[in-house]
Length: 561
Ligand SMILES: [Zn+2]
Image 1 (cartoon, rainbow, N blue to C red):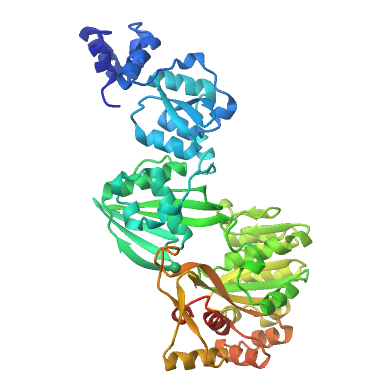
Image 2: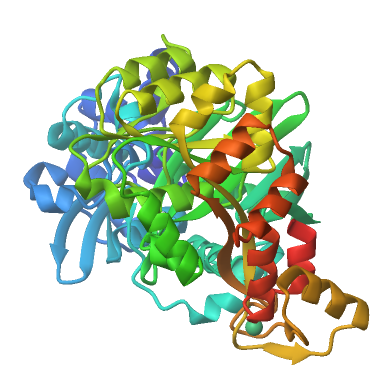
């Protein structure tokens, strides 16, 4: 706060050095704020102190006791932020929000408030103790629970245009170049996440060194070392957005949603201290209105989409979605749920907190039932007599068994498992003691999936592949003289050559074929052979066709499958 209040009052001749000394002794003794002591001792009135502050900051002062802001105005700033930073929204006139603050030169707070409310912030100065009194008057005395209740559910809007942020590189965002304001840094981050430049950022702070690793398309790809202070300050800013009020060195986790252009993003930040430092993970994902919310948006061929929709017309059975992590199966399952839920009376989802909320589906988070282990939780859920059930993880035999029972009991169960292919998963379950006969009677469809980067349409060009690559593509697709595309990178794709994602799929719903695969525990290569005979193309074909169509690079197809 720059100069201490006591010094200021002394300077203005409002207190004698003796009075200040006595007040400071009491302050030290009681731990009260100096302003409170001066008021209580009757040395000065609130107005006097605020006038001094006002003159000091060349900012108008306000006597908060004379104000009762409207509920709409109060609701502009979340309560946790008001209490944490001692700010009080006073009035709103068109786009200008008047806010009482202790120190109008604290640009961090002014910036954050502007960012949070989307308004122009006009600060007025008030003394700390009268801010506290006003906050308790307007919001009530703080209760122990308020921090938790308010954590991370606020939606913030940034009324801005974003084009310029595309040019800011990730390391620059965390280096505080040109003292980039926090809200601009945040916008640049959203822009970077939106154009696929990262999904997660990992910050490893050891002493005064920070190393940042970048995860994109499921892989940890690059790293950079920003200066420690600007980087940690920006993380602190994001933490406060997420409603995290823990002390430094405590583990934490929080999420909030933020709008960027037409899209909403879910921003999660979590941290774990270790001996000499801490590990912080920042995750930015599209929350709503993402590119792949309905089945038609996922990138399935027309033929596969119609087969899939046909298979989903049934009322019960088990549909398996099997892929390694970060392959986009959650997106596929949510799109499916969205498209078919209206046919079912009661729909439930049992999975870790979803990135996007699906209206009309009861959502249960396994981690929120700590008294039950996930399998028991799943059994309780399955006893709820739902018609349509989404299960986030059935990778264990116990969970698989529960899912089979639910589907044989009359529900349509969409269940996700982590494995390299559906066929490997089925074989693994059979070896773990799940009866193939039971699986064969429950499973009505299996889907495998990988997530590929879409080539940027603005800078992708055809090229002549080597004869070896050409042969390989011909063999995978059965097409003669296939054409391939490459992207060199441009402004639209932040020089990455990639813009958005597309799925590569394999789908088997043919009952006879499924039965044979399950009962004979066939491995991937045998399944592929058999499927080809039935005219069913598996994931390698689907991905290679997408390369020939110029949607993805062939290098990526080879690298992902
Ligand atoms: Zn491009």
